[in-house]
Length: 299
Image (cartoon, rainbow, N blue to C red; front, side, top):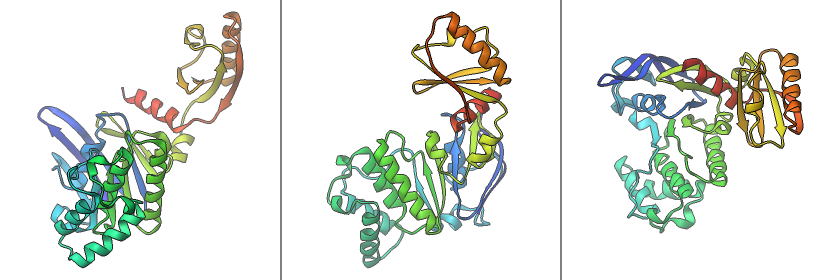
């Protein structure tokens, strides 16, 4: 459905996307994941035709021209791009008319989509008066007005409260089950877990692309999760055979090569520092562990 072959994008002397290749299959929820400035948004904009690649080839539905694929794709950008001084329904009607739909079809589609996105009770509310989560639902509704086969969403839930994020993803799953292919970029690892496959971007490159499960399985190290009453244990572990240490909520994830040796050294170091240890145990790597590792590999 989507194929990128050796795609590059330069802005002046800066290379923002550097020789990437990937493919998205029909029926997937495909995730773009990575830090800010990694090239996710630029790649998405090249796929939908907003930007021209500096090199390489982008193919969507076997086509390479935006005008040929536009009737079949939907797009929700990072920033809310609808009209704040129009109501929910006015925005939807405007989008429908831009796609050339008749008034009768627009009316039918609007009720169906606003009901699906739970915005029907708010159809007369100005877009400017919507919450962040409701604005994103309105963007989703607008992108669905022409019933696209392929839907692109660029960090659609950034800054949205957890309940609205969950509802938003429930809607994406429903759309996917109905046959829609979805490409979504996200900074949230729990959302990355919900994707069929994910591509991890860093410094303009794709450094890994696979299912979340396989990426975790490919992680080359062991993880010790440590819970202590100390707010910072890094200072006590400087001499221990560890590769990295990161805070995960109230615990620490310590990256090691040799589990038993590292565990004994850590317990001894914390004991000598009189740090009370609640628990220390091996855990499976999370996607966040994987992405920290991948980011460090490239940097």
